[in-house]
Image (cartoon, rainbow, N blue to C red; front, side):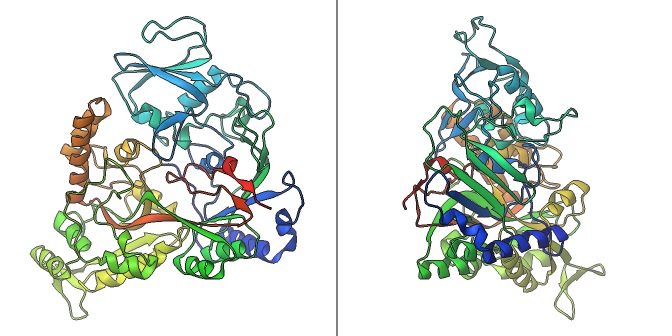
Length: 539
């Protein structure tokens, strides 16, 4: 999935970002949103760890969807049910090969131009790029269906619409069309070279200022056809340190602060200056392993690594919530994919040592395993924009040391992990993978694990494949029978549990500090939106 990434703490850009957070905390001028007298003048200030790494929806423009600037054809509610987005309704032909999406009548972009089917067609064709998820669908054609002619295949009524023709049925198409990489931007967003130069969307908020990678601000769009939002202005600021985000929320210099560390959560709850919300989400913290690496190629080595992990201990020490220990890759919040019948991933360091001994590893004088004159030494990469990751990495380092594995933890830019995946240099990485980025989850799972050659997406499998899993994904992509679909999901979950291309560590919950001056605050379990249109000022 496309994602923006904070830089290494040592980089100039990271220092600028942290400096901006400190300046915000120290500057009374930045508190003016809480001081003005009218709701129309007040700004909801959102802060989070995520930088605006790119304007391009394919590369990192998801923050524009979260701030409700840009829309996708399809949206999803909190129960993972598809609902209208820029498309007010859709139909599929009886053979499952033709989908027609009727556009919201009278929809306009923020520059005043009408949303035309031709614009949507162009955006979706662009989204077929391998960097997005739409290319997973067996799409034969994306075309303008606004000519007024009736489509006999689905008895379509003449309307501004887009037709997508498929080579084979693909029931998950609406889910892919909800992904942020399929945002619909106005033609004015693009330069002559086709690159995204501005963000001109069609959502309830329009861009006012844009200062990537750090901040942008929005205002309510007067041409929005839905109810006028009570919050008329909002801004987003990337603040790299979780402690700084908590301090800014506590000081009244941010109304919504996402991504808090457990220590700050406990302190904020004691202080009472803000409300703290927590929401389990379908995201898993896991060790991404290079299964082509000589030390990790044998499944027994990956199993030993998994057995060394005391997940409940890490969950209690780091998150202060032992129930977040991951017993399998897919959390209970991922309906249909979590398998209650799978045996939980165990903590058994003695069994881990036995497996490693079977592979010929023997402890040296310093306790580090060696074989044929080579030590069992690996580098574990991670990044700080999710504040718990470096702490979890340190705990994993120690637990692997106890079974003889020498691990060096390298904390840097999250973009280094995809780079290492692509060039093959990555050994291990501690990541937090969102399996709800596409609410159906099929799209993300197919992207991560579906490649027959073992080269999954940037955050997925590396040098690992399962023929049974690949067959199940292929069958599931065109399946319409719910019972068979569930059986294939179970087969996929089982293959991942057995093969361990990713070693699950913890399940995830999003944390949010919210100002008591706002009502209607909630956390989107799919991390699609900050739900600004649902907010109201209480005073």
